[in-house]
View (cartoon, rainbow, N blue to C red):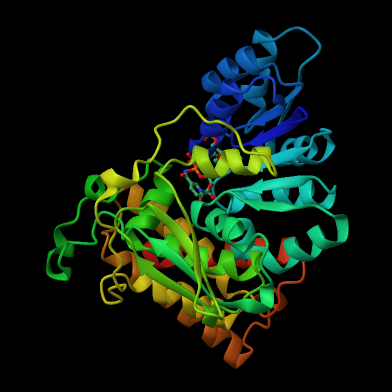
Length: 396
Ligand SMILES: NC(=O)c1ccc[n+]([C@@H]2O[C@H](COP(=O)([O-])OP(=O)(O)OC[C@H]3O[C@@H](n4cnc5c(N)ncnc54)[C@H](OP(=O)(O)O)[C@@H]3O)[C@@H](O)[C@H]2O)c1
């Protein structure tokens, strides 16, 4: 394959470091041109020494100044803050932008890359949840290809190659069920933060790990799939698959199911996005079919995981609802990580926020346009912020 130039947004995170691990394995295939992170300045400094990007972005001016003292050669540009991030995403000439920032903080940089027509390896699912329609429309306009990094969406992407969209019966997202799939609902009151952070199959950032424990993550993935694959929510199913080997499936109208399988290792979907249409001979543990034994598929226990239904309701409401839910969820997860609320309170707060939104919309009270229609990225961020504030009020 020809050498690809990369921008990695969120280079210090779980997706970012896995991406750099692939680059480390295949230095002749990739050039790291740009890196961004928020606060982990030491880790970014190490990445600069190893990968020699031309430009980096960090959250604050103070950290940027510290970096400038460490790297005095003028072949490195150091920018900071939201504006710096957009500059880095849009102005660094690359072949692929890896969107690996967590949360709605990743929206503007992802959009900026798509706007410039760069191909994007999309891990930042919030980009699709808050503004999927806008992102997809912009990508179609600029010719940017969006490669899904999320293992489920990557599996679907792979299962769709060579098939016609009109032949899809259903998209089936698999879910590990998280750490509480076998915990009886009666014992949920005893769940601790450490229990929730202890995902049985995947090592990920804290936010997505908590979302996996509540199954909100799967709900956000339904919304993501709806836009990425242009498919109504009613044609997307979720099935619990505890082994996380079948990463998702497409059911076709003739009764054929096509799936992608592999060990739960995010480097596999990331490498697929980096090398497409080629494949990289990754130095990772390989799946041995005969050692797998049985694979299990079970229905979702909706009573235990009300967040999943909330996400589906938000997807069906459409408009601002997914963005409002996302903002509220980020606030609630942050409060949970600070141990300010209990696991069992998460869904209740989110339900109240969605109820508030419906009441606002029905009564037309405080007629706020962005709570009715999302027409710009700014609208999406405002709706997310509205959900966040509503959740904060309830938490406090
Ligand atoms: N991890 C996975 O296996 C996985 C799988 C599928 C999808 N995803 C999705 O991928 C995205 C990243 O997840 P992750 O698990 O890699 O998250 P993570 O480990 O928490 O890393 C997040 C990255 O974003 C940066 N960041 C955080 N807040 C920021 C802000 N306000 N502005 C700019 N940058 C910011 C962080 O910088 P600092 O480190 O400096 O704070 C870090 O580099 C999420 O949308 C997640 O849902 C992740």
